[in-house]
Image 1 (spheres, one colour):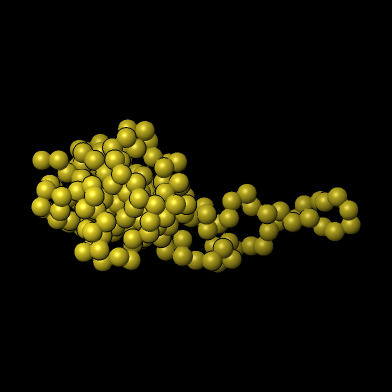
Image 2: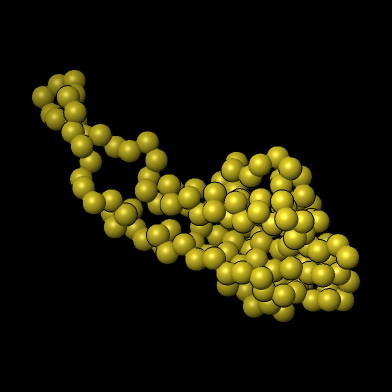
Length: 146
């Protein structure tokens, strides 16, 4: 029996489903929430930017290389990549399908290990985290027999 995992994610919410084969439908395996990604940048930092010497009369401000919100999205992408890695290493699935908005898909792709990334047969750059299951099934018809 070839199990397929379907990851539906954005920067703050992910649902992991599995399909056990043709006409078996979807089963929710896990829901992961990352509330920090929903906060504003100002709410994620405790201090103002540091200062540094500048050229001229005005003091300079040190801005972070990565915005706190982007950092939190990367942290969540790494958590999801670890979830997929763990599933692959215990042979919980043979293939995976991922739905994520373009920016988050890029983050996720950048943190996946190569063997796990090779098991992802379809990638859809759409945010279906708020879609009900029947709507998700419609989107999966092209690559699964539900």
